[in-house]
Image (cartoon, rainbow, N blue to C red; front, top):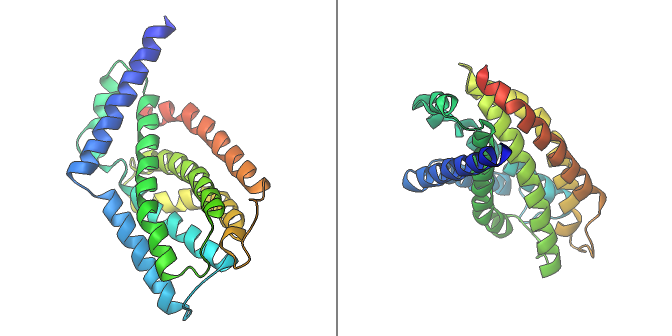
Length: 233
């Protein structure tokens, strides 16, 4: 009996994911808004700090915080179309596992964050970054950003689904999501700080990816477990 349900869930995830990606491609909203916000933030830091270049902990902090707040823009709009066009009601009536929506949204949001960073990281390097990371340091930076993206996508999707049910979603989402994402941003900033220093770093400190990966796993399982009940409410 479990095989048909698994197949149905996978098919639902695929259909919902295609819908999310096609909608963003036809009517771009999230990616342009997040990319524009990040570039403008870097310009503000460039002139506000009155420094031509940044390195080390300061560079890591600026990059991490900018990613966080740009992601909040995307999370705030992640479920708007479903709410306004009756997507939630259609999913509740469909004979599929409701967590398919959560999985599809997380994957789509993760893809949006990757596309954001394709624009954001080069803009950061041009406007603010002092030292040029080596190929090894760049690979470690990408790995840390990927772990951070997973945590942001999971928490952003969960809180976005919760806040869309309220009238004050623009206020509720950051109030709930930001405290939950503080550990993600701390681990990201601490982990990439040596990679952005003038002296460079031979290897990435293992504790920060480990803590970030564990945090992603815990919240991923928690969000998967409660999402079904969240839609019922």
